[in-house]
Length: 138
Image (cartoon, rainbow, N blue to C red):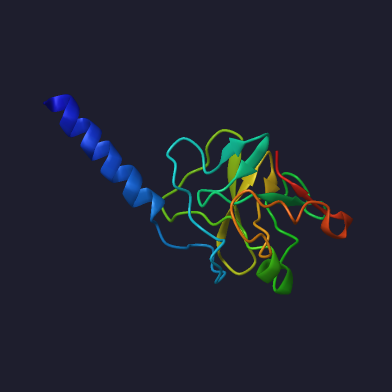
């Protein structure tokens, strides 16, 4: 009986985390807070995807480890950052940067992570190679 209660509690906690609101400061259906206690992303077919199942990207103009994003204003409207829940903390190769607008963003191996606004559904990778400066995060 105790195991059943623990399992039900864990399921409820995961469901609540999966429905967490946006926290990136960018109004977009692609921006979502981290839903996993172990990592803010997961891998699918060698690609990092966010908690909403959508592909994540890195921007060649970002400097790894700088703690800054070079994608601001209009860029961030097209490339919404992977937002960070208020109580989240850095996890291994995942770090948190503070954006110019005050929002917090996840970075992997020092590179900020972004969605592409034109990806219509999970599994889309239409942002890969855009402008020669965007690539799928791996």
